[in-house]
Structures are given as C-alpha cells and as structure tokens.
Amino acid sequence: MRPAPPATLLACALLSVAGCASTAVGDAGTGMRDAAAGASATPASDPASVGPVVAVPQIARPQGETAQWWYTSGAAHAARNGAMSGSAHNVIVFLGDGMSLTTVAAARILAGQREGKPGEEHLLAWEHFPHTALARTYNVDAQTPDSAGTMTAIASGVKTRAGVLGIGPAALRGDCAASVDARLASLLDIAQGAGLRTGIVTTTRITHATPAAMYAHSPDRNWENDGQLPPEALADGCRDIASQLVDPRSGRVPDVVFGGGRMHFLPLTQVDPEYADRRGRRADGRDLIAEWRTAHPGGAFVWNRDGLAAAAGRSPVLGLFEYDHLHYEHDRPADPGEPSLAELTTAAIARLSGGDTGYLLLVEAGRIDHAHHEGNAYRALTDTIAMSDAVAAAMAATSDTDTLVLVTADHAHTLTFAGYPIRGNPILGKVVGSSGEEADPDAYARDGTGLPYTTLGYANGPGHVGPSASQPAGPKHHLHRARDQQPATGRADLTAIDTTDPDYLQEATVPLASESHGGDDVGVWASGPGSAAVRGSLEQHVLYHVLVQATPRLRARLCAIGGCNGDGVPVLLSTAGDASGAAPVGATRDVVRPAAPR
Ligand SMILES: [Zn+2]
Image 1 (tube, rainbow, N blue to C red):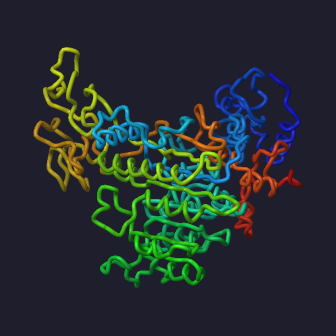
Image 2 (image 1 turned 90 degrees about the vertical axis):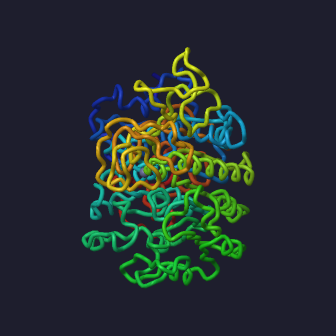
Image 3 (image 1 turned 45 degrees about the horizontal axis):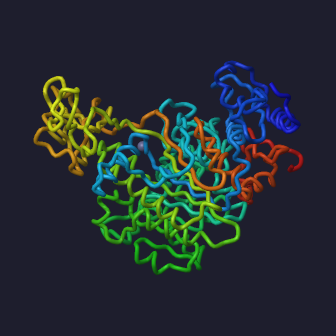
C-alpha cells in the first residue's frame, strides 16, 4: 500500500462533506475492487495506474451506491487509466443502440461479403481504432439494462435506473417529484458551459432515449410529448422531452440537431409537412417547430436533404427528417429525401468544426436496436454497416491529433452466432460445412432431427416458429406483430427458405413479441487524444469520465464550478444549471459545492 497523497486526502475531505464516506464497508473485497484499485488500496507497483489517484469511499453495495459515489468511482477509474493526460479539442461519441459484440462480428462479415470477400477478415471502421475496452452495462436496478439508464450513465457519469433520462438513482422511474432533486448534468450541459459547439444526430426520434439523455431530465423515457405525462407529473413540474429540446435548461439549443420524430413537436391540429395524412401528437396545442423558428431567426428548420443543403451557412439547424423514426438503411431508398447517417454525420461535423473552442457531437445509429427487437438480423446488420460508413466519414473529416472519437453500444441483444459454417459462408445463410469433421463440407449441416439451421439466431423474440395471430406456424417474416404466440411443435424445415432475404426473421427459441436486450458486455473503441484510457473492463459510466478528463475545456468547466479535487480531477456532481452556465433548474441530491474552486 502506498500512502495516500494530499490530493486523496482533499478528495476524501470533500466526499465526507457529501456524506458519501459514511456508509459502512459491506463487500469491499469485491464490490469496491473496481474503484478502490485506483485509490489508496492500489499497490505502488500497480502498472495499471498511470494517472492521479482519486479516493473512493468504501460502501455497502448496492445500498450505498449514491449518485455521488458512482460519479467519484467513475472519475477514479478514468484517472487511473490516464484520461487526465488527454488534450482533446473535439469529442465525437458514436452509439450503436443495441450493438452487441455479436452484432459487430456478424456485420463485419456481411460488409466484407458485400465487397466480394469471405468476410471474416473484414473490419468495420472503428475496428481500426488503437484502443478498446469492454463496458459493463447493467442499470442499478436491472441486470439487463435499457437505453435510457445506460445512455444516462454515458452522458452524465452516474449509473442509474432503467427507464430514466438525466436522473440519478435516488428517484424511481415515473416519480416526478423525487426526480427534481436527482437531476444530473450531461456532457451537453458541460460542453455548452465551456463554450463548445454541440450537436446530436440520430436515426430515431430525437426524443428517443439515447439522444434525450443528452438534453432532457425525465423520470420516464416515454414522456416524449405533453400528452404522455400523467397529470401529477405536470403538476410536479416535469416537462415533456420534446419541449426540453426546444426550450432548453441551459438557454441554448444545440447547434446541430438531426433526427426524426416531428410527431412530438407538432400539435394534434397540425398536418405533417411530409405526410398529408398525419398530424402532430401534442395535446397542448404548441407547435414546437414554429416556436424554435421564432426563437432562432438565423437558424433553419429542415426536414429533407434539399432543405439541409439549402440551409448551409445558417445556424442553429433543427433537422427532423421523419414523422417518426428515420427509415432503416435497407428501407431508406423508399424515401429519396432522407439523408443517410453518414451524410448527416458529415453535415454535422462541417457545421460544428472551425470554431476556436471545439465541439461535442453525439451520433446514434439508433435502429440497430429496433431491428433486433423485431427479430430481423438483416436490418440490424445493415444499420450497423451504415454506422461504420458514418464513422469512416467522421474519421475522414477530423484529425487524430485533436479529436477524440469513441464508439460503443449502450447494451447488447440476444443475437447468437453459432454452428460451424465454413469460411466465407453467407453470414445470413444456413450453416454449410462441418458440423463434425466427417461431414460433407458442401452440404447443409443438420440438427439432431435432420433439419438445416442458420448461423444467426435469437434467444427470444418474434422469430419463434410457433403460430401467432398474424403469421402461421413456420418461419416468420418482417414485420411480424406477434400477438397470441403459440408454442412450436418442432423446428421449421428451412431447406427451401432463403434465410438471406432481408425480411427473414431468424429463429427465436423463446416466443416473445419483442426480442429482448442482452445483459452481456459491449465493446468500446477509441481513437485520438486521451483514447489510451479506454482499456480493460469498465463500468459504462466511466466513459463519461474519460471524455471529460481527456478534454481540457470540459474538465476546466467542471473545475470552474467547483467540481474538482486538488489534482484537477472532476470528482463532484454538479447541477445541469451550474454546468451549462444557466440558472439552476433545481438542487441536485448528493451535490457538494466546495467553498472555493481549486
Ligand atoms: Zn431496445
């Protein structure tokens, strides 16, 4: 054991003010290993610790896991990994929603096979990055997480509950009154406070969980428009997610917002600009798009590719390219006006770059997750390849010397990659080759009953071969709305079925209307200044701390509002209002404000 340096003592003193150190040691031998390994318990010879030491209180888990404890423990791990030595000017986070490691492996093969190669040797854009890690994705109340809790961890540095956005673990999902004091500052708030330009790009509704975790505080991810809030939540001061984007807590809207979801911005009386037969969903009569245009006369609202091109030179820009989510990449040709994720990424970087202060950009490939839920590997993989194209575009438009690029997923799915297909076998096809060393390498492998099977499958979902109210027994096709699923009486004979068809649903063992998330780790890939801190096995919320520690303007902003220890490591929670420089939106539970910034 090495003696605690002065910085550690200072941090401990600050933490004791927070009351975070008062909890009893419960399972310090296991539960604290992650954080304590970077604190005073670290052996002096520990080669893994390359940065300032941050003391983390020993707590009983899970009951001692406050927002402040998560924040400090994440800071400790990032500092231990050397993130404080980063000098990033710009930060780009790519989030593949539901992009499990199996999804990445299968997508790289499909991408390679589309180029005429066997595929296994192919690499997606981020697989060329120099630094990788694994992230543990669980929510504080869920072994298998959801996108709201996981993106809040990445955006705010605090692991929290499933279903909440920008809210710490002290408040239960849906409890507006409790959530007011549990609001967390996000990377977007900090970046805005630091003067960076900011952007959010997604293929989902812009009010969906992942993008919303950057700009909204909502104790329920489903409160996307005002009509979705219960009356008591409105009475307790909660606001719908769409209104928080247009009327932001910081007073500043992001410079670039590209996504879908016009439905939650328009009133029930307003006809959608793209679809004459659709109207908005807002019950309060507000036209948030009109309000945004009035508030930003120099900006541009756009909803298709031509509008985006015509808005060059105008700022900010609000691009809502669909009534609901954007199309899957496979289906996008049906809507010629809809830009690809790579186009949107390129346009966002062009608008954000060039300033003195740098920028923060989130790009989400949000529909990998949706295709998995629908049991359709084809669309999940093609949307993953579309994200690879977007990452390649970002790498071409930025420099490794000043831009930290991080690629990860929020959680996994149940996609499986199995059997013994021969090298180069179509990844969406049936297994051909040796199920045993003696088997005919040109013949379909057979299951124990003599039937062929595919390489890809799902543990559960709408691809179960039993009958449902909408599709008969046997292989299922997209889009299968699987009501009243019945047990299968056996496997389907796939001999004459083209399983590489885009609409084929991979076989699912357990019948579920919606395939579920997986609880396994996801990958993290990083490039640029500070990226060397992305290594080893990380709690997911550590990623926030790597990003703020590796970006001098972000960590300086947090230090300026009193969030840092004596080594300049951001270790204390701050409010969204303090971080963004706006009027505080409410006191935050667990917040400590030291007497003077250090
Ligand atoms: Zn999902």
